Length: 148
Image 1 (cartoon, rainbow, N blue to C red):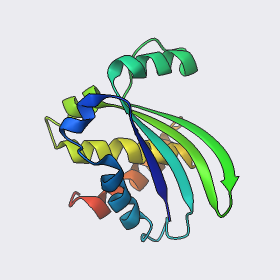
Image 2: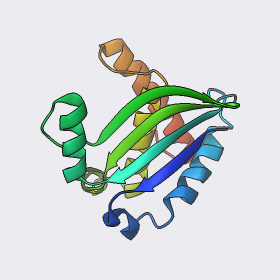
Image 3: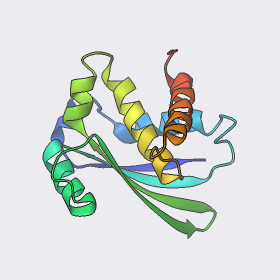
């Protein structure tokens, strides 16, 4: 089963996502039953933060002095029967802004899924890799939301 540790790094998140650990636990339970992820025994952490902190992280680790929606920090650490795959940071303001067109939970799911896929080896440097990653994101989102 896949497990996430949620770190609330900014109070804005509490306005909408009251119990982020519970929310993600339900999502990951669903994901762990899907064919592609059934045998995955991963663990990762998610930092729920804001634009200001995302800008600092992006500058420190990627030398880009601007905010961003999601950052992924892959690492592989085997711990008993579970593989720790890394850390994800998410920006509240960007997700909130995007959710004006859809809804907050859909945008939140898109971002942590995107980050998780980076942790397990997906990237989008080439067009074909972008398309492969996007298909996987959409497939996962279909399990959570009724989308096309």
